[in-house]
Structure formats: C-alpha cells, structure tokens
Image 1 (spheres, one colour):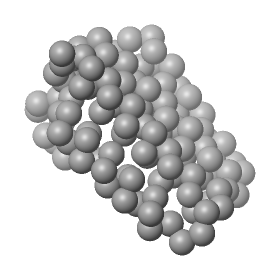
Image 2 (cartoon, helix red, strand yellow; image 1 turned 90 degrees about the vertical axis):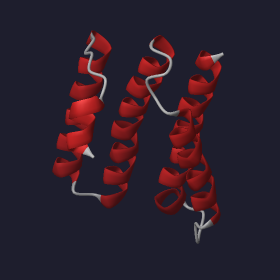
Image 3 (cartoon, one colour; image 1 turned 60 degrees about the vertical axis):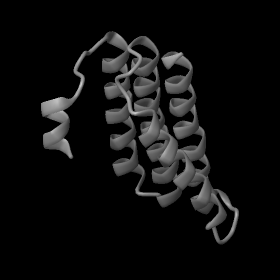
Length: 115
C-alpha cells in the first residue's frame, strides 16, 4: 500500500501538514514515555485525528483526490464495528466511535465537494 501511494498518491506539504506531523510525533513520544495503555489509546486517537484533519483538509481543497466510495465503505465498517464492542467503556469504545466520526467526516466532505 505504501509503494502504491508513492506512485499514485498526492503529495503537497503545507504548514498545517507539518504541524500535524509534529503533533503526531509528540503524541508517539508521550505514549512511549507514559507506558500507560489508556494514555496510549487516547494519544493514538489524537495522532490519528491529526491525520484525519489533514486528509479532510486536502479533500476540501482538492476535490476528487480521495475515493468517496472507499471512505464510505470505511465509514460503514466503522459503524458495524461499534455494534461489535462488547462493553461500552472508554478503552473499548473510544477508537471505534472515533473512526465513525473521522470516516464520516471525510466521506461527507468528499461528497459535498464533488457537487
């Protein structure tokens, strides 16, 4: 997947992209430092959210650079995943719920910008 993204991907770096990268790197360092699974989960969601914001921004500014179908299917999978959560506490439900929100956001922006 990484090799394909280098061949067919869209590359453009702004100050926002560098801020996302720096924040993601900081989150990884904090995760290693804390060694707490719940902190790691929360930081992982935060790091992932930074990437989601970058993709959402790119999709808004450059419509058609993301596959609406792929993001919609990812959104549906995330919704189904929420129904598979055994117990709704923060450690079990945070990431699946975040994926519904993040994938839904990208899907919505992708649909809206294609019109």
